Length: 236
Image 1 (cartoon, one colour):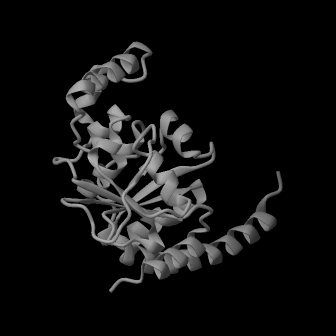
Image 2 (tube, rainbow, N blue to C red):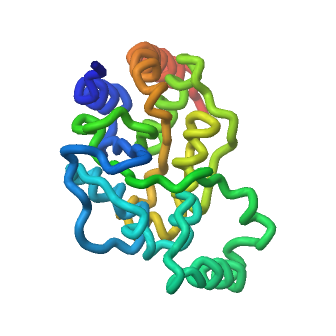
């Protein structure tokens, strides 16, 4: 059985994380023994914020209806009375020149709507995570990406942008992705101007954590080496 708490502790230390990594898992049925989300949130990525704060819960498709774009990337069809909201949201984004119509078809999305989505801090995940989200500063993202490469788990997509939520289906389909986020996500999750996301498939996490131990040590040695060269050779 995987020690998810041990992985969170190790990776948080090695990558110098200031936020807890979040486990997200898409399921075909409601999980047993996991509390169901109650309340309302404006977006699917808002659930990331709650999990990073320490909550473990699952959502059902209707919990995502407030976010037309997030529902789209998660393969969720809005209820009939709200079905027009996807088109209205996209029309707004096109009107303010945020997105071009031809870009929509290229947005990664789940091929099938999940019956439930589990959110949790990595250490407390009740199910093996589908994707683990790291909200972190560029230095931490650098270390994670170097570990991903060393583990032979590199993804095939370039750095992603809006909408941030597409990072989840993208990571499931194509391997680890880096996302710069989007304005909605930054507001709904409280992501700072200094942070971005790295999304790693849960199946790859143990290998990446092992590689991160090596990468963190190597970076510490190279930092000392580079600092010495800077002090010795920089005369400008």
